[in-house]
Length: 290
Length: 122
Ligand SMILES: C[S@@+](CC[C@H](N)C(=O)[O-])C[C@H]1O[C@@H](n2cnc3c(N)ncnc32)[C@H](O)[C@@H]1O
Image 1: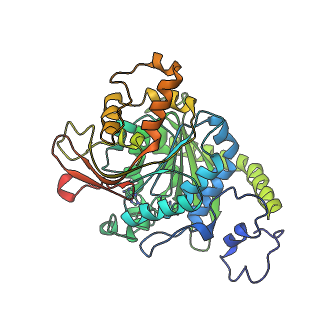
Image 2: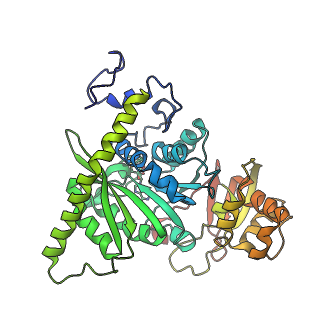
Image 3: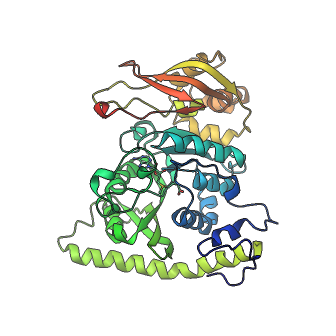
């Protein structure tokens, strides 16, 4: 993918390991979490293509995020802590703006401990909570307060009874079409997000992302694809959602669903195309730092 | 766990109507210095349940917060310093959060509250 990067053969050991390039050599202060400092546990999801896609999406949007001046940021399903740590590094604690505070939650008790270790190893802070996003009631007090929310949900299509099992299975098991947990997260995200709230979420093609956009559209959110990535096994999209005052809540409940669906996909396609220059800009930037 | 977080948590057991604020059971707490940012405090003030913060700070032996507060006090540096300390610098490391209605104990270990509910509580 990135032919201009020069790496010693010992680093690029096997295909699919190209993410290790990010760490070597690091002449510039790191803008994201460093893999070698990310803590782990056999029961905790290791940073993977989807994690990197989400962090790349946040990097691509970093300038917008800084201008947005979020006060509360939150990750749901933080796993190893790679994503929330990266976000906290790239946005900082908001010393020059209104201050930024980070929350990270996961249903897996091992994951929250690992996340704390990862945050600590990078010298950044987030408040970490062990809970199930679907039943924590976090929205009672945090409702309408979260300005940036990031989620890399369990999205792999699996039999329904694999969802919500203990340990590592809860990291990927997504039930029918991989949508079970996603569909539980969306209404909670809607409640948690502030009026100016942004949501970044990883989805798989099998999750039917344009239908997810449609669901969110009915709640009054516009959307665009920030990063699209195809690997051997899967095609990932990182979608950004934000409240659009021009979208009337429930407006998508058009009698001709087919038309609405097509319109949404068209919007999604447009935005995807308009994203390419930005993506290549960031890629070039990445190159210059390695 | 900072008291800011405590201020955002409640007991969500099915049927519980009065799950906030959770009572603190303090086995161990630590104080960690955090950079002072008055804008952040001003942003957060409206989001905070003041009484809950006062009582939580008190359970860690910090008695400096006024019983009542309103936004006019945000002009006072002295007030902001105290608010900052209570909200961000006092951490519950070990202990529990107790539901005011049911007495259900949510353990806090290594500064992480475990708010997971049992199957029969959802
Ligand atoms: C695909 S992993 C992503 C981990 C990490 N954010 C990353 O990108 O590398 C999904 C995470 O969501 C957590 N999770 C699954 N169901 C959850 C739920 N209902 N509430 C909170 N977290 C959940 C899993 O434990 C797992 O850590």
